[in-house]
Length: 250
Image 1 (cartoon, one colour):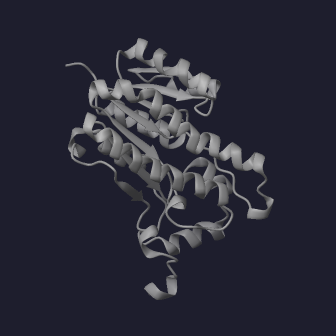
Image 2 (image 1 turned 180 degrees about the vertical axis):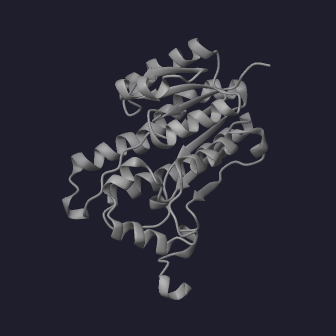
């Protein structure tokens, strides 16, 4: 049987790399895309069934060149995982337009550009799109005016994609991770922040990169063949509890 192909952006680390590895475990082949060429090369070392492509998803010319290269290498695209993103946290009054656009360009424009470029290939395979947003797109929080707004845009873009592409057999869904135990998060989160998250999340812990990847790969699989236009919060219940005051749950 012909192996299915997934294109994963932001594949050099974190959720993108975990998703790549899980696709490989499931017998897929993967086009790994990232703008950090050295880190991407390291991430792909020892992985069978992958090819690496360096590109910035926020740049239309790079996206226009990237997708044909993937098609030349693999012949088709069965799943697009729009995972590439940047985080920039700061107060509203300190977020100047340059910072705002930097976040929007990657987090929202990149999803639009990559999806648009891949639509013809996805129509051919009756494939699927999974966009990675965040619970910050579902609920407001301090210091996330650009980040949260960009992710809210990704959520609505997903619904637009599902509405317009469904008649072509192309599904589109969105995964909204909550706090995830990445190396970066553990490096910048103080013990006080970690404890506060544990208190506010019903499962009382951070998620893992692999747990988020499991949801992404499921949505790309035939097991989710009748699922489209859905927003899945993979967050240990964090979004469902609102503010989540610990005292109310004791």
